[in-house]
Image (tube, rainbow, N blue to C red; front, top):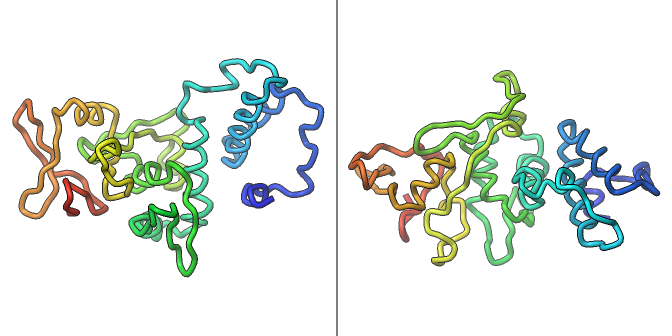
Length: 235
């Protein structure tokens, strides 16, 4: 019942898809997903349940959307949590401050303190938060990737739905890197790949964070709105 309340569901929604085929329910939710992101999250939950339920039959690839990262449950949960819990209709001027609250996470319990209360944060929330903090602009080259439908007059939060970026762990989790905001960068796919091939590396120079191209022997300052970990130090 807590999940239903969180998604804005009440008695008026009971039985809405009763007797409907899975394909009808999923298509209906997708058709209205742009209007309300909670519908996309409900789509993800229903799709995952239908896939796990052998009696539901085989869903088409278009309905499963397994190749589309925007419809991965973890990603949608994270986006919804940031908007509805972390930001909770915060004024535009307060958005960065709210996102930076994730610097105070308790990784052992996967919670963050917001005001006087602690909240459980969604898996993937940190990756989504670093993208939102930089409005999906690459911290290395400044590139933004747009989707059709983006217009400049949209609010900051509305624009996020039409932008794309990667989140990169500076010290990989596989090498005991912390799953923290300070260990994440917002990157375009091209710069992301260059970190993984070791062409790019981070450095600290005169108290500032820079990126060094190990092949072309060039360096430049990294866009930094949050503390960044290099090795064991935070800058």
